[in-house]
Length: 262
Length: 266
Image (spheres, chains in turn brown, cyan):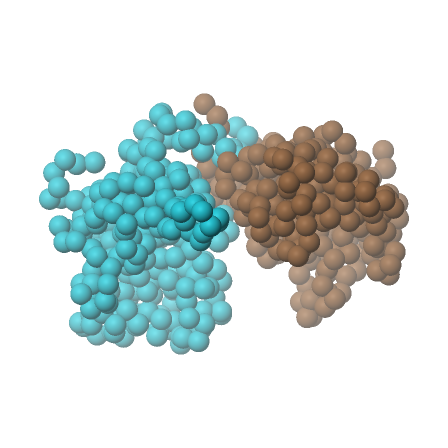
């Protein structure tokens, strides 16, 4: 089976400093990969570079292919066709990811109108339908609301709806629940898992929380200081971490984690 | 919790804090938000209490009232039997020496234009703490695991964990009895988190500190606290010894909270 996403020896330099160093990984169609790392490990920057969203000051080398099509170094007008349509991103902080001046419905329908040429009326209906699919109460009302009128969890549901609206083959979720309460986090994770399973969407899930990652993915890579230090099935990583850093990370996580369900 | 009030360091009874919100309609009265709605708590000398709750549960409001930074709508706070009433700084100065706080985000709670030494010196000067301040600064910096040689550096030169150590050094400098930590590790990486929690535990033992730890993270509270208070919508829904609350939660909300925490595969 050919990979959906191939990231091959990607290195990123910012201001003469190498922040991501030779990172390679593949994601199969419908596959789910977890990226574990602490702050400064380069996990977010790798994701942004994959999406073609890395800052202009970054020098990127290597290769990123989606469905066999090279993305790195492509001009912006090529990338806008792919981004949002074939791959999309769910961001960490739904407060800053949404446009505060635009109604929710329009933010969800915008990618549909741009990528699929859906007419305004039909796109508005699709947006309302998505509000329902992501479990927002009273979809018709929410579609007309502005982001500030929603709670943090509701905003992240909108973020997920926007990312999935065009039914992309790949979704990258970068710490999508860090800003949320634990009970809301559990709901958002359940929603994300359901939706990617329904549409067989490939998922790259980025987090510092090993326990959280283990609830959605099968395979993980562990990043530290811009390099991948370990890659394996998530159960193996937890049971028998091969790298010292992974062992430290797990030991730290174990100290404050709660026992598996009684 | 003890029945004997004399060995309690901090007691609060019937704490309420209501906020009157802006008018929604002309005909109806202004709506009232009950941020805290009758919370009691007691902290024994040398004890450690974890306050757990999600956003909007009233935990930060509670901390502000316990520290005399906000006026309760109803209810009282007593420290060693003396009432804590917010007001002008001077009458509360004795309490400021007794109770210090560590906040969530070290970068915004440390003045970026002050050196480490002047940050840690500030409470010593403001609270008229007797003794050699320079010696005390060096002492607390090494107590929190920072090199006293770094005293002339600025907060931005440090990592997040080190910045939180500076905030802790500032808090323990005036030799408080009570340390209140409001989400002290939420903004830190997992591996750094445990180091800071261990440091708090070590300091609590070394300096006979009583601890109040506010957190949304149940694991953190279980790691550090003997007693726990679960807040929800301004009400204390559950309280007790940490081990028993975590082993056999009685309130459905506590159970839901515990179940929502992701677990590592066994």
